[in-house]
Image (tube, rainbow, N blue to C red; front, side):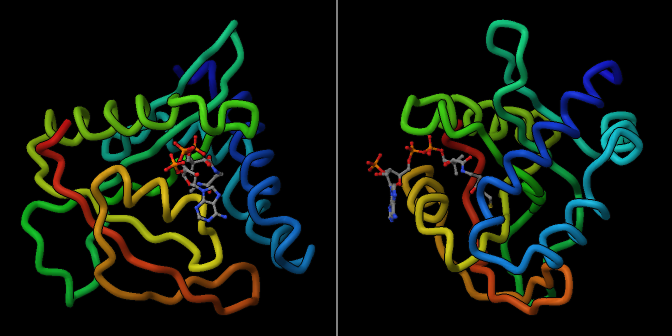
Length: 166
Ligand SMILES: CC(C)(COP(=O)(O)OP(=O)(O)OC[C@H]1O[C@@H](n2cnc3c(N)ncnc32)[C@H](O)[C@@H]1OP(=O)(O)O)[C@@H](O)C(=O)NCCC(=O)NCCS
């Protein structure tokens, strides 16, 4: 799996830029990308005992990934046994194909296996496709939270879903 770090870093970078690059200042996107993605960062994430990284491979190419981490949600959060769905990305060619739904089922199974009961995530309020996808995957909107992209303060929606419908 550590062998996937380079491909994962490339996928994480390209999907992030494809999703947000056109809607943000290049310097903010660049800062986020260089702080978050790279072979060293993704190697550490894959090796982390706390983080679960799930990748989808098609014809030897990584096309989607999701990461779960036990980061604590904000204090106002009142759902039992929560785990953070930290990243969930697929390449554009797969959008609408059902692949993301399969990946979400895997995410929920992985969370259940680790005895978690709820998934929580944050998503940019200006990402309507992802919000639509999460809602159809059983997530409910439970509030807003600040996200800083580079030097830009933005508003994210915070969403939560039970893992039990996996
Ligand atoms: C989010 C993501 C994983 C969802 O996968 P997907 O294959 O695109 O999801 P689906 O096509 O099954 O569902 C998307 C839904 O949004 C709808 N949609 C598309 N554009 C929309 C828009 N502008 N506004 C509202 N809904 C929209 C689609 O019609 C579809 O709903 P439907 O199945 O009822 O028709 C994928 O789009 C992705 O990787 N996006 C880039 C990365 C990203 O945004 N990740 C989330 C970060 S928090």
